[in-house]
Length: 424
Image 1 (tube, rainbow, N blue to C red):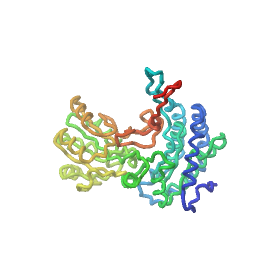
Image 2: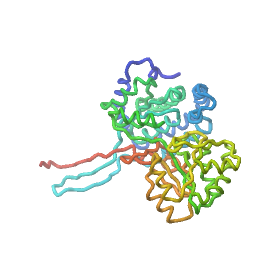
Image 3: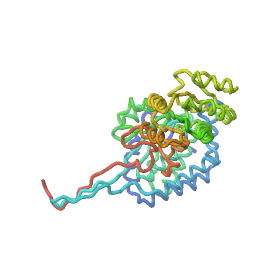
Image 4: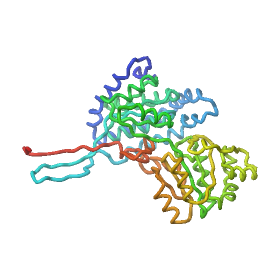
């Protein structure tokens, strides 16, 4: 049964936030090996409770309409829980990001001055739909010696409650303060309290829609690290291998359309547009991808009999679809593609498909994004795929973290000054 801690009939979350701040001492006293062992045990516990997790998840999923794109983001399966277990074990094997000596010097007066990495402290995360975030954030925070305060969405309440209960049970059974991981009520009245809790929260990370991210950025008094929405482009250049380009674009759009690294806009060089669209129509048609095409692409696809076709408006560019929908625009060359991406990109992940080294180099140097690709699907922008074990999200800003925000970035710096009676 869910712990009474998560009951929504509360007037303030201050007690939970105070408990989180207090728990920083407990997690930071643990040895590196002990933090890893928590994650190894948690992987075993999740595997043992798959049926219970799936029952809770079904309660959440059934509240959404069948055609709601949030269903895929919310849905857990035995295979997805298995992936979470594998991720926990991968994070457990990563090197401890804390205690790393970044610099060390001894001054003429004998003072030893060292700069080391230390945990951030209390990490607050506000997210929507995806219950996998609960495990990812908790594992990364535990491994790096941080406390996490989680505010998931109402639509994932049952799933998140079971997952956090299991995490807290593992912590408690190992003699560790369970307040290292806490789940906040989903009542929106508490969001402002969390965003203004500078006494208790060291950093806030929003993960979700652009509107959520903007709300947090505009209202938080606590420092914010954004994990941005993904408006991702793939530019098929005139020299591209069109079979490879078709496979790359289809994978980026179809494999899991509800995630932030999925493709949103295809940019085509006019020289290859007709041939490429003929090839792309096959996998797109099989997956029933709804295409929002500019005038020229629309004419080509209409002539070819593509069934799921709409004329694009200006609003269909720079739009994160999170669904089996995609916009297409035909351009004259790399410079036009770069201008379009600069205007519409969310600075998440951008790709060029080309066999011209000079074009690839120019694209990758000039495109302003957290991840730039040549001849590969944007779906690889992921902490696990990058060998980071897991991620809290994909940061699209430039301070502190950019790209997959994973274990290595859940630290800050601290100066250690050791003397023997020196005075100034």
